[in-house]
Image 1 (cartoon, rainbow, N blue to C red):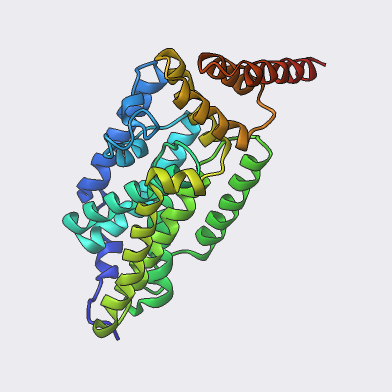
Image 2: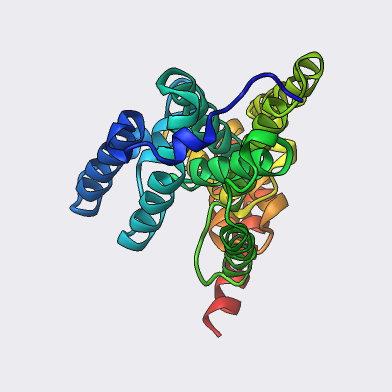
Length: 299
């Protein structure tokens, strides 16, 4: 039996208005998101190729922004639902650290394996994962998670993957999955007996380290095979062309074409880079390929 008791009964009956961290998170996220809906430019708060790695704090601030009212309302509801309870169980200090872990960790995984992502859903899935693990393994927390809620989150996760796959709606599915795993490992660690707690925490530390390694540019270039990464390389290539750094531009567009060989714009731009390098034959061949792809697209 773990001796790190979590007073679930007291937390369940706690006044949600005392959950200052949760309330602050909701207020800040709502204010920033609504301003973004109204046209305020908050791109400097989002993790992307322009902000990383210098502004690594965007790994958390990305979570505060949302893309639509539905996105915002859904995430606010579950952040409040889970956050008020977890904050009451753990206290303000540990809860702040947990939010930083879930927010930054899920955003980092999304960036490493996919592309930019925004919203509190990584935190929401992280809190869900924590409660799922506590409900399953911690004797003081039996019943903390309603089975219907668990089923709904599982179904929603699958629906989001399908919606992204069929290009119905873009969803940061990597952030959802990473958030859940981080939260579940945290809960699993807390549920351990004192002698085993450190060993289980090693699993959580290992996942955090793995995500961190994935952020390294050299590693990310290998493991990230998404279209989002290809578009990032494309935009970086545009900047390189503007600076007349033709070597860099050619390298970047070769990376784009290795992922998206049918992208006419990339063939056109690499032809410009080759021309700048004096590689006239390659430039002409690339330009012809871009024209062929444009013609096929217009049919």
